Amino acid sequence: MLVKRITVLLAEDHVIVREGFRKLLEAEDDLEVIGEAQNGRQAVELTGKLFPAVVVMDIAMPLLNGLEATRQIRKAIPNTKVLILSAHNDDAYVDQAIASGAAGFLVKQTSSHDLSRAIRTVQKGNTFFSPSIARRLHDQKMARGRGALRKKVAHLSSRELEVLQLIAEGKANKQVAAELGISIKTVEKHRQNLMGKLNVHEISGLTRYAIGAGIIESSVQFTIV
Image 1 (cartoon, helix red, strand yellow):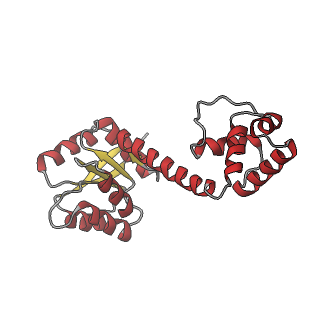
Image 2 (cartoon, one colour; image 1 turned 120 degrees about the vertical axis):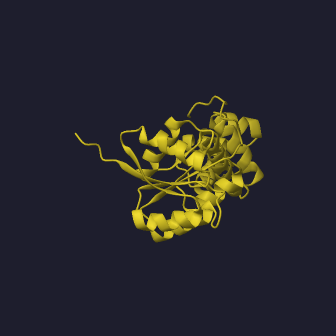
Image 3 (cartoon, one colour; image 1 turned 90 degrees about the vertical axis):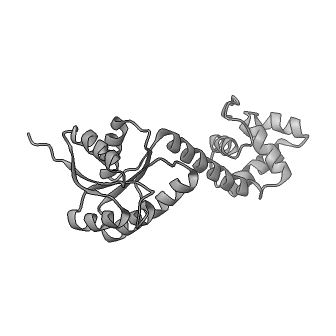
């Protein structure tokens, strides 16, 4: 049975590095290197002629850098995926690569196994990042999410925040009332207001919200009441 190969264009200005990548990829039954570019402008031109499934693109290249080449390729040939492979893994480079339309970002210290896996992954329409970069992106996404949650929390009154924390810590209405010196009916009113303001419809949702906003630690043990 014939295996349908994923066509790859290598865009790298160092010949010895390019040759090494070619040997690594051609050892895989399902990958085929159909072209090589030694600068960014050539990468754009060859992509327009060969229509590879994936371009493996270095960032630092003469005539046209890899980020701008990626932007032009994605605009002209949107079906071709671009995988950045660079010695640089700073946040600025990664952010620019994503903004340029790259489907993935690998550091050059990556293994041949990860490179092959990344090509297969982006060819299917998914994204692939080196583990260290993926962790950073995840942490940044979580931080942005928490920032959005905290903006909502800022609209809560001091009393509502107190009630939210105690509920999230697993306190029953009676316990919250005793802790704050208010009536159970008032606790229920605060809880109803919290659910309305935060667009949450159950106690477990309030707890998840409090954890996400950093009001309580995720390690706090709680029970749903």
